[in-house]
Image (cartoon, rainbow, N blue to C red; front, side):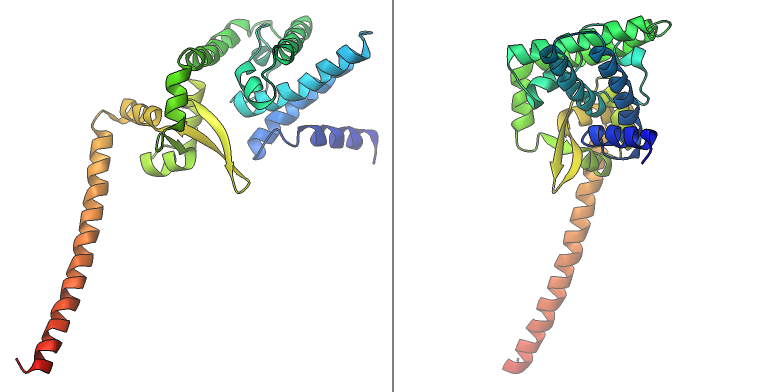
Length: 259
């Protein structure tokens, strides 16, 4: 195995838990390559072994969280690391550690990445656009933080959530519409898995609001009526079959009784 193949294998091993599906793999690969370059830069700075290790450990967390929660179509360093305030610290606390020390370390690594990205000139010409996109993320994060009790209640309420697959089947949404709504801050989400198959968990109330905003306020009502009509029609057909069977048995019994 030559040096390039070895480097690619190391990179693939590093990012193997960051993605599912080819599109996410391409994003994770580009992000991982950038983080490898950043880690090489750190090793050349003469930092203490402990400090360097903390930065490197946090790089893996940043790669995982950005790949799974960033919902960007293409990795652009100037968009991801456009300013020093860390993205995904809410998810970091949920997935990795809630300790203040760990969070401060994670945020410090993000600031270091911002400085590194800025020094390479990646912020030139994309800063304003990145800020707009990042503002959407932080508005969603702010809403999650400041309405934590209500959201927690809705996430835990029976029937309050549904998967992205169910949203597609039940409401006629496409996966592209769901992802775009997440990017626009219209849908909150949680990553989940069943039998090893990952999916997005969504709030039913937000999916309903999205559909009403797209198709009109009476769309869901008409959809419910159609669903109910289909069920009633099916029940009538079953009852007719049962009635025919009972009437046939009634006739047989009367014959046996000589009536």
